[in-house]
Image (cartoon, rainbow, N blue to C red; front, side):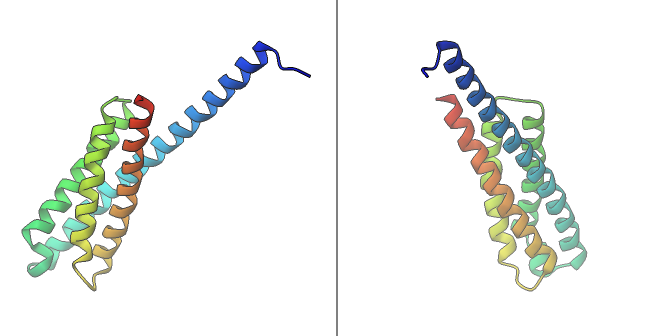
Amino acid sequence: MAKTKAQDVHTELGSQEHEHEHAQDELLDCVEECLNCHAVCTMTLQHCLAKGGGAHTELNLVALLLDCAEMCQTSANFMLRGSPYHVLTCGACAELCRACESACRALPDDEQVAHCADVCAECSASCGSMAGLADDEAV
C-alpha cells in the first residue's frame, strides 16, 4: 500500500521530533558534566592549596583549575538559558578541560587530582561533542 503525502509528512515530523529530543538529552547531559566538573575542579583547588606547597600549588595548575571551573560554570549557564552562543563556550570549555586534565595527570599519586583529571576528560568529551553538534545544526 502506497504512503500518502500526509503520512510522509507525519513520519518526517516524528523523525525531527526524535532528533530534537536526542539533542535536548545530550545538552542536559553536557550541562550536568559541566556542573560536575566545576564542582570537582573547585574542590580539587581547595585540596591542592591545603597541601601547602610543591607541585600541588604550582601556578599553572592553580590557574587551570580556576579557569576550568569558571568556564564549566559559564558553559552550563549558556546552555541552561538556551544561548545560541553555547557552541563557543562549549568549544572553549572542551579546550580548558583538556588542559586541566593534562596538568592534573602530571601530578602522580594523588587520588583527588586523578579524579579531577577523569572528570575533566569526561567534560571535555561532552563539550567537544556539543560544540560539534551545534556546528552541524547550523549547516
